[in-house]
Image: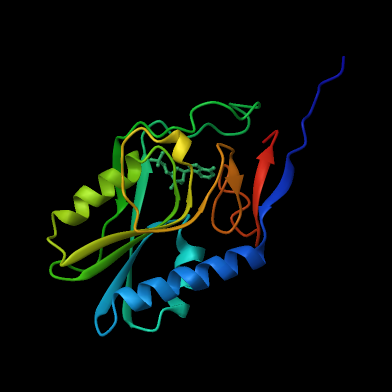
Length: 191
Ligand code: IMP
């Protein structure tokens, strides 16, 4: 009896050069918008770590970092549980904080840095949490946006690329914790 094993296929959607160019533009926008002020980047672990480190190094402002860790209930299945890779990419909107902020956000210019804006449920939750700190300003920088997947409206001031509804990995984004270290952003097929 034969067992069919599907080998994951990765196709580059956004090359490292395209990403670098767009991140530079986003950094220029942030530098212009907050000229003469201090900002704090709040990265959402783990997916935004690489984007934040590239973005922050190109922003010419007085800047500090913090990180927040969240885990959505209704986690994505592992490849073994979902060999076709189609089920439950959706977070259920019930988010658990796994790493809280280290600093107060009160009266700060906060830039929430996220890898991808999908249904919008996670960012809506984090946004509410940050607003409770009463920051001076709160803006969202998301490298990728899948507008067709939105379940809750959310406004991101800085968006890198709008992409179609495909599952992507690389540049911080994972599938079952793998592929985060790919320098390009790739569509994964047969995960
Ligand atoms: P949302 O609450 O549905 O907007 O979920 C956003 C989170 O889902 C992101 O921070 C990612 O961790 C994850 N996510 C959504 N789409 C993708 C994808 O295509 N690749 C990897 N992770 C994704």
